[in-house]
Amino acid sequence: MNCPYCGYHDSKVIDSRDANEGIRRRRQCLSCGSRFTTYERLQPASLFVIKKDERREEFSRDKLLTGIRKACEKRPLPTGTVDKLADDIEAELYRIGKAEIPSAAIGDMVMERLKSLDHIAYIRFASVYREFTDITTLKEEIDTLVTNKAQTSTSTSQLPLLPNDKLGGKAKSHRRSRK
Image (tube, rainbow, N blue to C red; front, side):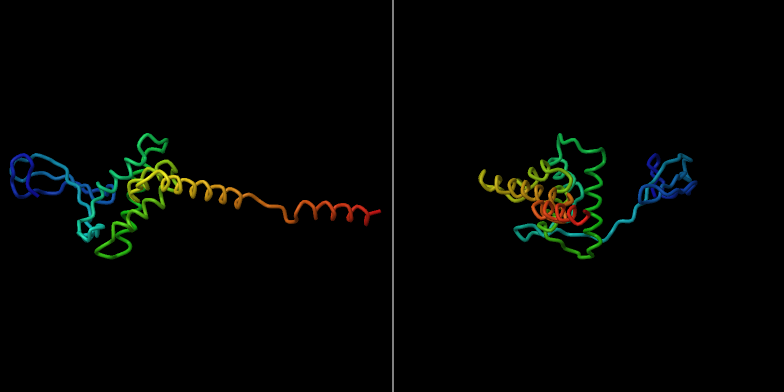
């Protein structure tokens, strides 16, 4: 590690501590005696994204974050949600273990997570990602969101064991048998 003050090529480590997914080291230059801090982080193997036009490009967390931030702009999301979303997607991409990932797979991961996080952000991202060409395609996507939300809300609420018309008849017959 070269000293940032005098450029000398050697330094000694004074203190090491764990820091956000890496190691923070406090160093002292052996030439000028100045102290400085370095951060070491494991750099995973290179990951390449296969674009729609078959070009290959190195994965960029910044590009992922930019796209998600644009979709979530001015939405009432808790602080750190967008960064956590990007972290989760990046971790999953590396967990897959492939050297090349299609951009469509990354887009689908983002859409899946945005759909459960915020519907407006989801529609914003989908409109760019799926390249909606007209308003009817956008309306169809919104309609599927609305119908899925309606199905989810009714399926999670508890339904009666028997229909109301059968329940009324059973209740009457139960009262007669008590007499």
